[in-house]
Image 1 (cartoon, rainbow, N blue to C red):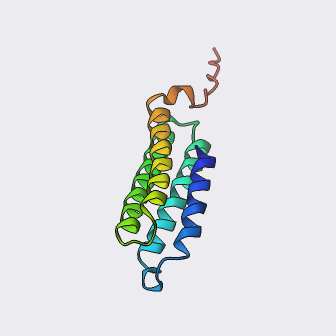
Image 2: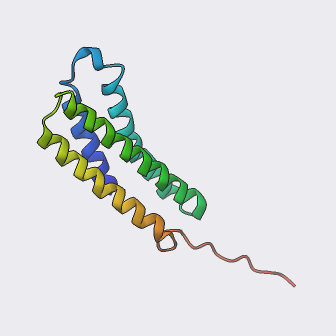
Length: 122
């Protein structure tokens, strides 16, 4: 999932180089930021998996960023900055990422690190 999110973000980076200059501080910035942030949140969640609540929170943040990226992809298609086919391929990649994030969150006990119980001295 992380690798797919980086791959998708890099694809977005490359295609967004072709967006009009007047979009550089709006759509271009937004789609690059949200796509990269999805990957960043996945990594943060993975590193915080000692704590179930923190892990799930970061997965939720990543899910939100991935969904936001899908919105910017939709605008990119509607503005004719990318083809419908390219938009659909990338949208489906983010559907897959979101599905995996939801699955991990729903089955977080499988992923959260088990902490050793502290021994009680009597």
